[in-house]
Amino acid sequence: MRKSNLHFCGYNDTINKIMKRGMDMLSKELCEKVLEVAASTGADYAEIYANRTVHHTIHMIASKVDAVKDSVIAGVGIRVFKGLRSVNTSTVDTSEAGLIRCAQQAAEALGQGTAQIDIHLTPMTIRDIHPVRQIPAQMANAEKVAVLKEAYFAAKEHDSAITQVTGTLVDVDHNILVANSEGVYAQDRQIRTRMAISAVAEMGGETQTGSHAPGSRKGMEMFEEIQPASIGIHAAKQAVVMAGAGYCPAGVMPVAIDNGFGGVIFHEACGHSLESSSVAFGRSQFADKLGQQIASSKVTAIDDGTIPNAWGSINIDDEGTPGRRNVLIENGVLKGYMIDKMGGRRMGMAATGNCRRQEYSFAPTSRMTNTYIAAGTDSREDIISSMEYGLYAKQMGGGSVNPVTGQFNFAVTEGYMVRNGKICEPVRGASLVGKGSDVLMDIDMVSSDLAMGQGMCGSSSGSIPTNVGQPMIRVSSITVGGR
Image (tube, rainbow, N blue to C red; front, top):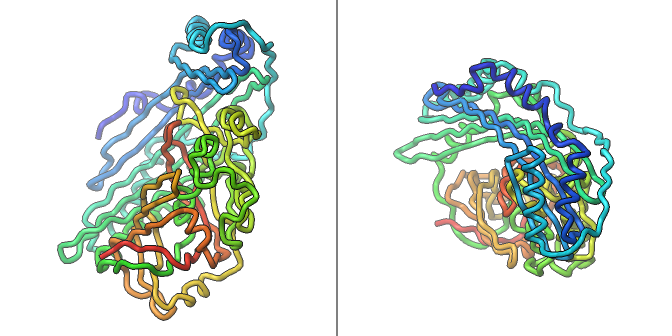
């Protein structure tokens, strides 16, 4: 087992000291001084974003702990606007001299001019709606390993067909500070915990993989609500079922997409097309369509960063705007977009609390938080019984999408054929191919069993935690790829 010096040499004390310092290195007075320098050549907006983030990872394979890794990422990004021009600089030198130098670089890159704004910061009081009871950094390593082992061996011992299991337990302590020329001076601490189990099953010379990776904006108390063993069993069951499955037939047919991570289709095929990073430039299938019917009347879609303790939730976004609940589509009608400050300038609209970035070295942009199709009134049973012949996509995997056209291709990691209103044999190798705007119109049944799934979303501002979700839905007609 590879041992991290940070973890095994007073890890808890070291991390607690790091997090206690937080962003206190950037006082209000220092931020005002740095912002004045950044805005000195005529910027009409200046911003400081700082983060200090501790990642702790435990990994298991071959029935033993293989690695314990710790990392600390800390630095400051400085950004200035002048009209629709934007300059972003960053530094790991958080001394006053280092920050002033970074601000000067931003000011010089913006161009020649004189200061136009006065900087007066007011500390923002943030109501934390994401209480954490068991801070991971304050727990012994042995306690975390015991939780991971419970999930790992539940998967390994589930069935004799399981040939390999890998497990990972990750906790992240992400502290941010945002200060800008609009007077914002705000700090937030974001603690997240996630476990991922992957299992491989072999039957008749065929191998298939199953996985499960729940997470939340909580500490280790997450495992009081989600039993670790259930995570391992979920992954193992999926692997065993798929190892014994035949190939999915191809064709155009109705598809029932299950709740939870099934919402990844909306996230990818439609959600990215509702971000101002696409809409503001006209590079979206939904640009200039506010107030228009873009989906079935069965569809209401929401991005909500205020769900307590949800994986993608925020108190403030990475521009200091409070998180909020944004109705994107209501009964099929487009009601709004997800907008950051620069996107708002281009669109003539206010920011919606959707500006996010992985860390200080990335320029931020509009991103999703917890995005989902709202619960409907149909039942799961009625959805399945309505299908004479089709596919039940129980678990979705990854895929690709073009946000301009909405064309997508998604893998189905666990699927079953439906015949005469009954779920029948499992099938593998299925994929869903289509266009986001078409799928929205073709959703003709929406159940009431809303659930969420967790993922990491990658885009120009890096990889960020996002929830995807939906109830079970029925798409009346979609192209299913298979054999």
